[in-house]
Image 1 (cartoon, one colour):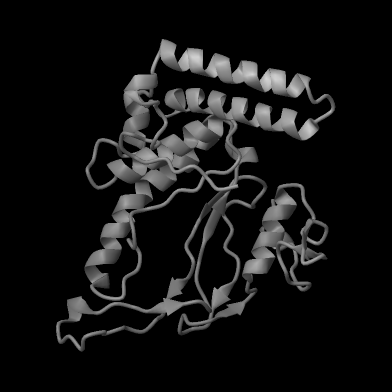
Image 2 (cartoon, helix red, strand yellow; image 1 turned 45 degrees about the vertical axis):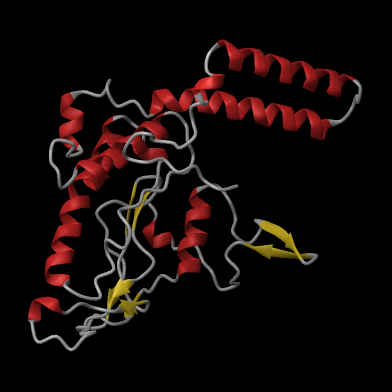
Length: 269
């Protein structure tokens, strides 16, 4: 159930292509032989639905590998689209490529796409005055382009775009090494009050929900806990968080794991 890692540079997906010794006719003969063995095995065991499902899942995986080559090829995109995502600028090219690939995946029916920036790009425990503007410059244009592009292609109505991270930053400085240089200080983690934004998929546009206290430390007005947000997402997916359960140690468990979770209707269009 793990996702497939798609890189912004070639090779986009590791191990997608067969080794040289298996390419072409050699691979085709190999797959034909495996299919023959599978069908003989299946014919000797009528009614084995699990076996049939396993064969079909491998065949689906092979078709997905073939389709992946096309979806990751950006050469057919217009220059205007590439410029929209910032592929023409070194600061935005990498994340812009990730966002453009995301749009192509969504366009072709991929249900969940996760976009990441470089490792620890936003973890500004030090040098936040330099690091934060640089991180913003990397993602602002590409993230906006993704929303714009989805909307102009008629995809935003049934696609939820969520921009955020695991936590925010405290409204006080962090000075790990006791540095005297003001430019060297950063800010530590804050899990009590921080902002995320969403677009499309049934969320209300142009709306700000909730506030922090005047110091910017804790959510003060209309807080949305993580379980509330998940319940709201599931609702927009057409699922009831209280009824979506799985077995664990013989008991029904929910994904949200909190009976107080609510759908935040104020966020919905």
